[in-house]
Image (cartoon, rainbow, N blue to C red; front, side, top):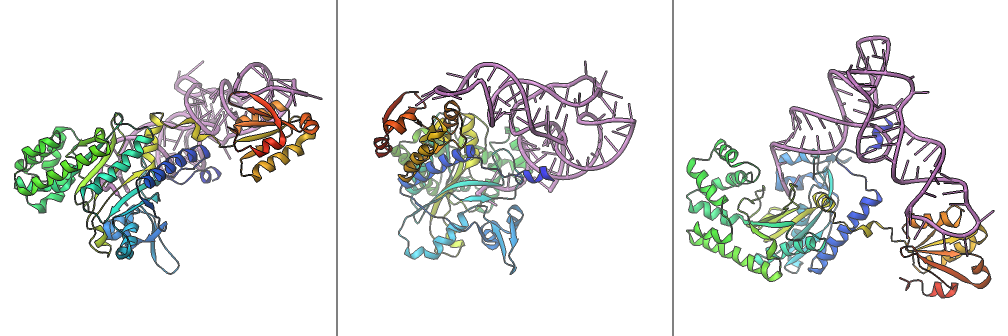
Length: 434
RNA sequence: GUGAGAGUAGCUCAAGUGGUUAGAGCACCAGGUUGUGGUCCUGGGGGUUGCGGGUUCGAGUCCCGUCUCUCACCCCA
C-alpha cells in the first residue's frame, strides 16, 4: 500500500524542479511569442459542464474524459481541451470584442486515455486562436506564431516541417472527380490513414471502407500530389481553382513572414475532426517518428455551434509532451534554465561571523536580490560546496576582515575570481554585480 | 476499451538451467580539511527484488492475478 500511494496516478507526472524548470522555459517562451505576435491571454475554469464537451464531440466523449457529479447532481468534467471554453467565452461577448479576436492560452488539460509515448492523461497545451477573420492571412499568422516559437527554441526547418492542406480544396477536387459531398467526410477519415500505412495496406483499407476502384484512384491522385503547383493538374471547376488560389496566397504570406522553408503541401493532412472547414495544418519533426508537435486549422462554424454568432475562426494547439520529448532527444534544452537563479550565497569563514552573514543575507533579500546561506555551520570549503550545489552565481565570504575592516569577499563561482570590497558598497551595488 | 513486452537502491545496471546475509557505479549524507567549491581519499544511510497469491525443502529467478510503464490498435479535441 505504501508503495502504491507513492506513485502518481496513471498517466500523470510529478513536476520535480528539474522538469518544472524546463516547462517554465517552454511556457515563458510560449507566452512571450504570443504577446509579441499581438495575442492576449485568457483562461477558463479547469472543469466545465459535461454538456459543453458533448456539443462538439458527441456522447462518446464522456468515456474519454474525467467526469463527476457535484452534490447537486450537476454533471461536470475536467477539460480535455479549451476550444469549447473559448467558443463559450467568445459567444458570450461576441458583440463587444474588437475583431479580429487574437487570444492565446496555456491550459492544463486532462483526458482519460490510455497513456503512451507522447500522450499522457495530464498535459499542457498552448492554444492560439484568431476569431472573426475569414482571410487566409489569419491562417498564415497562426502558422507564423507556431513556427516562430519553434524556431526560437532551436527547431529549425531542417528539423521540422509545416504540413499544410485545405479541406475545401480536397472537397472541390473530389467533386471534380465526381464524388458527391456526402461521401467526403468518410473519405477524409480514410485519407488520414495514408501516411501510416504502406501503399498496399492503404488500398486494402480503402476497399474495406467501401471505396470503389474509381474512387480509390481519384483519392490516390490527390494524395500523391507532390506540391502545391501540382494541384492545378487536377483542378477542373472554377471553385477548385479559387481554393487553389487561396493556397497560393497562403504560401505568399508565409514567404513574406520568412518561414517558407518550413512549408510543405501535404494532401494527406485532413485532421480527424469533422468541424474543420478550410485550411488545416500539422507540424512534424523530420528526424524521428513522434506524433504531431502541433495541429490546427480553420473552424468557421464552431462559435455558432456554441450559441454565438456565425464567426469564422482559425487556430491550433501545441502540447508540451511531444515537444519536450523532441527537445530532450535533440538536446535542445539550454543547460542554464535548470539553474536555480540564486545570485548570492553568503558564507561565514567561522561560526562566530554567522550572525553577520545572516545580516548581510537579510539586507540583500530586503533589496529584492536572491540570497541564501548554509543552514549548517561547517567549514568554508563545505559551505562553498553547498553554494555550488545551490546553483549560486557568487559566494560572499564573511570573516575576520568583515568584523575588523568592514570588508567582504565576492567570489565568482564560475570563474573562481574573487575580490574584496567594503560591505556597505557591496550592499549598495549588489544588483549591478554580474 | 483490445492485444503484446517489461518491472531489482533516487538513476543506470549485475546476481550459471531455482540454492548462504541481493551487489556495483553514479547520486545523497558524514568525515579527512579550524579561510576556498565544482575535480582527491575514507566511511555511511538507503531494497519486504512493483504488489498479492501459488508451486517448492528453498523463489529476484517458475506459475496465476493485479498495478505501473513501453509498444501496437481504438481515439487523437
